[in-house]
Figure 1 (cartoon, helix red, strand yellow):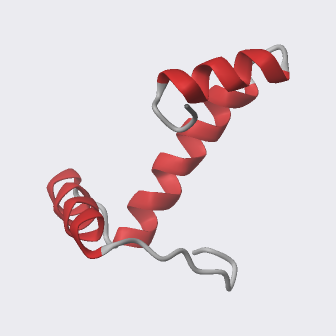
Figure 2: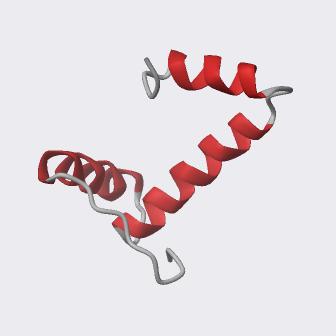
Length: 64
C-alpha cells in the first residue's frame, strides 16, 4: 500500500508493470511496485555519498 498516496504511471508502463507483476506472482501491481521500490531504495541507501547516489541513478538512466 502507498499509505494513501498514489503514483501515476503512463498506460504503456502500467501495462508492462502489470504483466511482470502477474508473471512474478504478485497479488497486485501495488505489491509489486512496493517491492521493486523497496529493493531499489535499499540499494541506493548503501551508497556512501550523494555523489555515489547520483552516479548510480545516472547509471540507471534516471539522471542525465
